[in-house]
Length: 263
Ligand code: SF4
Ligand code: SF4
Image (cartoon, rainbow, N blue to C red):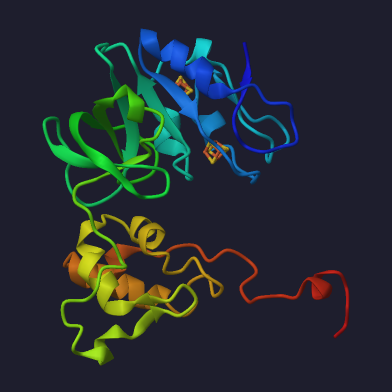
């Protein structure tokens, strides 16, 4: 039976969670938690079993058939919004396994203790890694499986090696000049980004975490500084860091202009 994902599309939706929950008792299955109506369909392309379907309207909600899913995890690695994870309740004893994408610098391996994070980036608590593997998809993405209490199973959306936040005060607070903003749009301080940059394997993951480059200017003013911070922190040449795509329009444009107004 086809089940609509959570991407809003004005459709009558069947709750995907209860279907995935039941199916997960027999082994790993994808849970598609897609809440945005955006032009996006890598999950559909990733699934060679036809379990995910977006269709011709690329903004439509992904429809998911748990009966076709074999829990391979390709869609988890491919989804740019990190909106898909795997759930496996077959371990029993009130425990569940959750597989999420991980793009930070630390190497993950079974036995390691990590922080399980919810969808808002808040820590749920410690969890044990039971599996980690590269699964295609975006460069630097590892699929990390953690075992958690079943009560957390639908809340875990990511893992962290250790807790780092950009809100934590600088140790050198006495030197106010160090608190200059790297990103004015999102008001992110340069020194704080420098402190955490070594934790990230790619410019994209550092950008997503820090929000530098996701504001009004789309990185026009801050991308080079972010690249320089990452290169320095990971002892790379700046050319090795790469760049991120600045989405159009390159400069902010008034809606009236797009509608043909002269002024
Ligand atoms: S886990 Fe594999 S089979 Fe299941 S929906 Fe994702 S890509 Fe398809
Ligand atoms: S790839 Fe991810 S964000 Fe894009 S439609 Fe599929 S689930 Fe949603």
